[in-house]
Image (tube, rainbow, N blue to C red; front, side, top):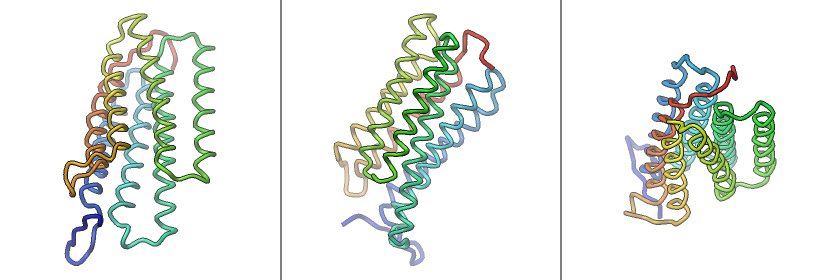
Length: 222
């Protein structure tokens, strides 16, 4: 039986999972707001900020579906979960777009990569209409994360981009979180694999934010 907590007679299911989800929301939106305030290379920063906004939104929806499940009907839970998975997809769409926009590729290559990014999101969005398992979310965002790492690896090889170690590190930490989530590893009945995954995600977000701050496009893109 999943742990619950009663606050003034109001039952919250999976309280640790709910709190750690909401922690992701707070951290992601705070980091996104910091990016928006940066004026230099504003397009890159805003694309990445949008990625942070949507991952925060996904965590908000996910935490609500976990914590308030006893008070929601099946249809409400269904729509909350769909909002969660589509928010994750949008976060990857914008994060990858920000990475492509900040890369020193010729314009036609950037255009082609943006097209592939949009196509990947369209396929994911279509697939998730009739599917709900979280494994499909992972199938989408793992390749998206790898694409960020590959592009930044190229940028480091080409011009020693200072953003690369941070973004690649953020990707690796985020992928570690995905492995933990799928493993089912549980430290305590009140701190399960989802809770640990959320804390690892927070660390990944901090690294990704630092990388997004340091992206310096080599050509005029805005």
